[in-house]
Each structure stands twice: as C-alpha cells, then as structure tokens.
Length: 248
Ligand code: FPP
Image (cartoon, rainbow, N blue to C red):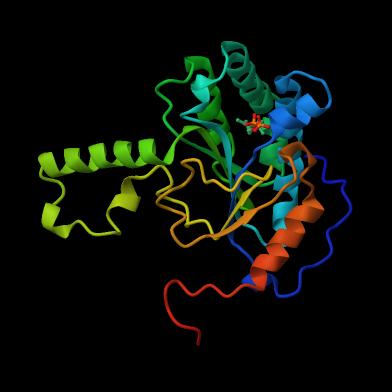
C-alpha cells in the first residue's frame, strides 16, 4: 500500500454510495492468455490490482470490501494452477501484512479452512490478529468459499444448537441463519461487481446479496482501475434501491 496515487475525483453525494462492495475478480486467465503468458501470470497481475482497489475505498466511502479469491469449485483447476494460487496467497499475506496494518485495513477471511494447507491457515489467522484493531476499511477475502457450502456449514451449526437445546426451533426466522454464516459480523453487500463480461454470480454471497445491486463489466480483473471502481460507486449512488417497496 504505497498511498502515492493521485486522489480520486470526489463523488457527489458520497453518503448514498455503497458501504459494502463485493467483487468477483474474474478474467485473470484470459488476460494472461491474451499476452501469451501462463494463467498464473494473470493471477499475479490480479493480486497487484487488489492493493489499488483497497486503497481507493476510504476516498469512495466504501467501508467494507469483500473479494472472491478462490471458490470451492476452483479445486477443479489443474494442480499447477491450484498450487500456484495457494502459493500466491501465502506470498500476498507475507508481502502485504505490514502495509495493510499500517493503512488501517482490517482483514478477515471467509470460507471453509478445513481443506486449506495448515501453514496458509496459520498465516490467515495471524493476519486477522495483526489487523484486528483496524477500522478504516474492512477487507474480507473469500478463500475456499462457496455460498451453498457456507449455508450448509451454517445450517449444521444451527442444527447442533437445536440438538443441544441452545436454540428453540420455533424461534428460527430469517434473522437466525445469518448469525451462523461466515459473514456474521459484516453488513450485507450493497453492490456486487463482476469483471470480465460474465453475468453470473458463481455461488458468491448467495444469502447476503439478496437485495444487492449488480454490475457486470467487460474489463478483465487485472485491468480494473480505481477510476472504473469510482465510476461504478458513483452510478450506484444514483440508483434507487427499493427492497421490494414502491417508490416514495
Ligand atoms: C478468476 O479468473 C480469478 C481467480 C480464480 C483467482 C482470483 C485471484 C486473484 C485476483 C489473485 C489474488 C487475490 C488475492 C487476495 C491475493 P480466472 O482465472 O477464472 O480467469 P478466466 O475466466 O479468464 O480464466
């Protein structure tokens, strides 16, 4: 986090902007292929983009940023790509930890840690602890995350509480399940962005995004800039969210 970038143009009406933005960072592989390079080259370029986007959040009034780094389905990729991505996550944590702490970023990870390498999990825990006092930006990294998997794991814990007599099944309503989700301390996303021209949500934050606004943009993730981020935040602030009600 170098903090040396030019300030972004102030967004009129920043109070109406999204407080929580979630991003499906897609297109790294195609970006690398277009350059005749291996897919991992694109993932490394994508990791460098994360810094620029996190740094832009305070100027844009974005307090929570959640990024999809590795899905429960991504294990189906080649062993070389999976191992390269895991290595990239370890390098990212080592390289960025201090800068994230100094920049006031609180980092959290969501997803199932059981299948992840023990060394990586220890590094994730350490980064969460190192940044736990920060409050300027809350960065959540989804790693081995799948929305259905998260709901299944949450349901299992909820069922255990019922079985142990800690939860009355008659009291279960739509406010109960979110307390068991990985995102229990986060507000729901207001805006979900997916790069690379695909209009799918790919099992990302299924429960939490019920009322989110979506932006599907053609830019490949390694080309996504803070200016483009700012313009999506600005166009969100011009939208009217109704949550099922009629306009005032
Ligand atoms: C999707 O592009 C991207 C991923 C599966 C990995 C996302 C990871 C990063 C941006 C890198 C690092 C993140 C952190 C937090 C260090 P794709 O490979 O599916 O692209 P394609 O659709 O063009 O093949």
